[in-house]
Image 1 (cartoon, helix red, strand yellow):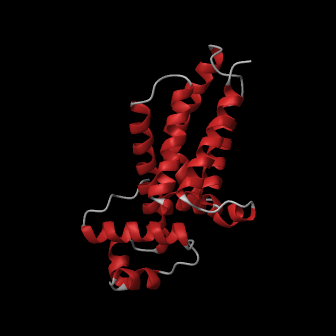
Image 2 (cartoon, helix red, strand yellow; image 1 turned 90 degrees about the vertical axis):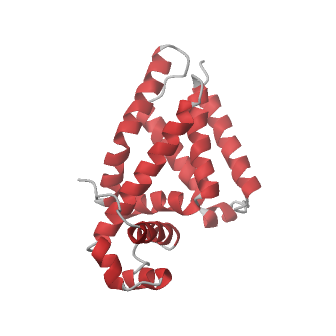
Image 3 (tube, helix red, strand yellow; image 1 turned 45 degrees about the horizontal axis):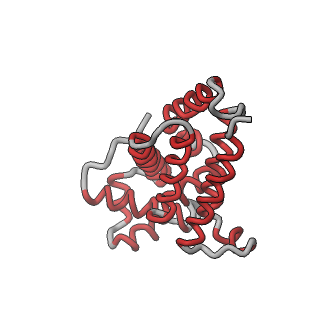
Amino acid sequence: MSAAPPRSGTAERILLAAMDAFGTRGYEATSLDDLARSLGVRKQTILYWFPSKERLLEAVVDHVADEVTRRLERGLASAGEGFDRVEAMVRVMFRLAARHPAMLGFLREVTRLGPPASTRLLERLRPLVDRAAGYLEAEMDAGRMRRHDPRLLLLAAYSMVTGLATEVEVLRAFGEEPTLASLVRRRDELLALLRASLAPA
């Protein structure tokens, strides 16, 4: 069951601060005491809105899943057909990495944490994933895209986006600095790779 959306400015501040902390420092490395200090509130204030750290994590998962879905839906609404829709989704995710890196970092952190957080995230994103897989399947059936397993393709694209956009130390090991220009180049390289793999034979 989804956590109720925050009803106050204080709850919203706590939610966003938790997303930032979990997405940059990690879930285990962030205590409620640390979070309270960074917000200038008492720990009891956090517990009033979110009765435990686990409940706070659930609320952040729901918030991020809803926000990613909203942004992808908006990007797809103005996209064309065929590969344009794939490109629109990739561009939305890289734009998130540029403007809200903690949000993409949080997605990576939830994947690392595993169940129940990752299961909750998957359930929240499932309608979007189902529609995307259905679209790719229809394009492949029509011969406009090369045949692949649509769900594995989406998983690979998601993994590449989060890795290329958030794994700073790995990128540095490969000689990539986390600059905006580098991010744009990584996005364009990924789009070229996807385009080549999906082009009809």
